[in-house]
Length: 291
Image (cartoon, rainbow, N blue to C red; front, side):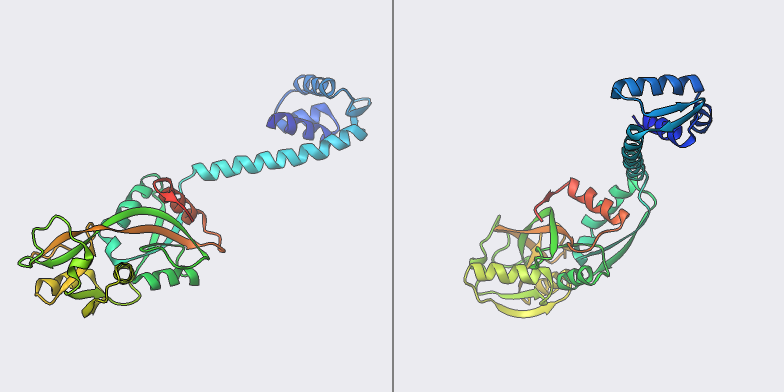
């Protein structure tokens, strides 16, 4: 199809079969047979013959206009496919929560770079609210956060789900339990993340859902510090099971029915670069998008 269009355009522009054949690196008899077949298929002559000169008639001019458009579209399609096949280049500006730097983010990046070794990443770690702000302000292309941003202008794709646990000292009365309900810890003092961090929002939402008003002993900006303070006997905390730093002086008791949803988010109104778009599509291919 593409060669047929290219041959017809060359004949129309050269107005001579021999000159057109030289242009498309074919032979004059081949183009002559092609043109005869095309005119039979269309049922009309496309050229007026003047010796060896071929002059487009009204049918030919109409067909040439469409042929040029079709050839342009096909060429654009070929280029797009080539770009899709080529390894991604450039940098993805990715923001994420501190806790995701232990396993989730390194795993996603390493698997993406297997097929895109030229892709680079600029990484930013911070609190959930700050991470989302980086995307909104255009300082980051994508962010991996939990929980889901409370903004309608942010798209979202679920990446993973993590169990939550109550972190307690090893000699605590809850040690050895297989699971626990948050209401059972209503009289405990809690060590929590500061406002603006994803785990603080999750903690507040869980307590509100169970009509609890917990006593807050300390607020921290690091999950590892939460576990350290718990190990010192200063309270209990709420942490994700998979990403938590395991302090030797604490025990994790799974929290019944409570999880945190992790997702990839980006700003709806801003186009992504080619490499950022490819990384987003790579992550979405292994997740369930609902944004």
